[in-house]
Amino acid sequence: MTRRTIWALAGILGLLLNAAAMLLLYLWGVARAGRPIIVLPQAMGGEPWALQGTAQLVVYLFLLGLALAEIPLMVAGLRVLVRSEARADWILHSGNLAFVFFAAVYALIFIVVTNRLDLGLSIAGTGLLRLIAGLVWVRPAIAPGAVE
Image 1 (cartoon, rainbow, N blue to C red):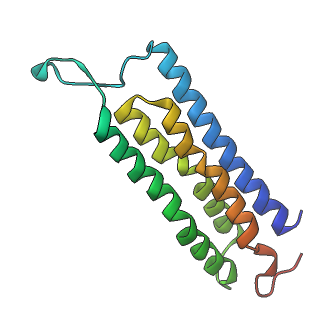
Image 2: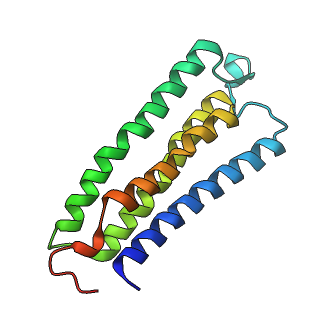
Image 3: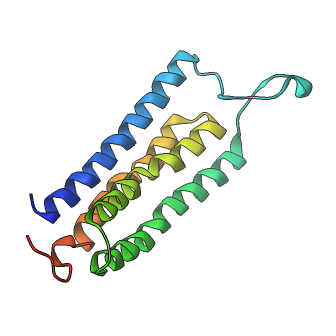
C-alpha cells in the first residue's frame, strides 16, 4: 500500500471511531430515557442538570468554532510533519486518525453539558471536514526521500 492509501485509511478509521463514539453516546442517552447526564450532588438537591437557552447556544458556538478553527492549524502541523526527515510513518498516520476523531471529543463535551445530541452531532460532523482537509492539503507521498 502507498503512503497516500494508508493516510486515507487512517483518516477513515478516525471518522468511523467518531461515528462509533456518537452511536454509543446515543445508545447511552436512550438507556437513560433522555435524562440529563450530569446530576448535581445531594447537597445541591440531587437534581439532573443541563445548560439551557442562551448558555447552551454560547457553548455550542464556542465548541463548533473551536472544532473548525483547529482544522487549518492541524493541517499546517501535519504538513510540517510530512516534510520532516526525522519521523516515523506511524506517528504521521496516528496524528491523522486523532485529528479526524477529535471532533467527537468536542461533541461529547457539548452533549454532556447540554443533553442535546442533535447539535452535538453537528460538531462531530466536522470530522468529515477534517478528513477532507487532510486528504486534499496534506500529501504524505511527497515527503523528502519517500519511497513508494
